[in-house]
Length: 187
Image (cartoon, rainbow, N blue to C red; front, side):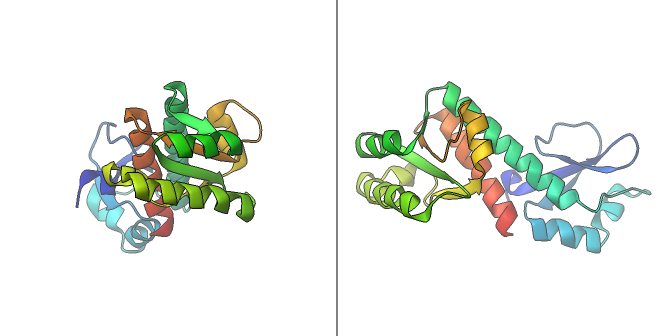
């Protein structure tokens, strides 16, 4: 298993199990597969207790805390992609961008209209299959894992419902963060 498929946990000074998503906090760490079910199983089997070999405290909502941190990290990556000029938002802008540029990922707000999203999805899939861009990395399926407020925050605009990423380093970092979030939520 690769390091990007794992989550690291450390102990706070108060001996509370704390997620360390960047894997850079000091101290002994316990590594768990980056899936919600794996964290619940680790709690049930007392993996954290054995791993730290001491009396520890684990918050009952640690799995939700990890999800929130993964979402925050992904949105932070989207902000960076936007600042780098690699992110596009808005239905009309995205339709044009999908047609003329290499869009590697498509995002819809979780509460978006299915009809509108399907038009973009069809165009995205068709164009990405023709260009082969997704073989170089990217999200094969459009992502519905962020709320309108989160997408709006990333772009500094109100009511961002649809967004896409052009190829580039900041975009690939966003794709990796999003894939980790999706894997965590579905696992």
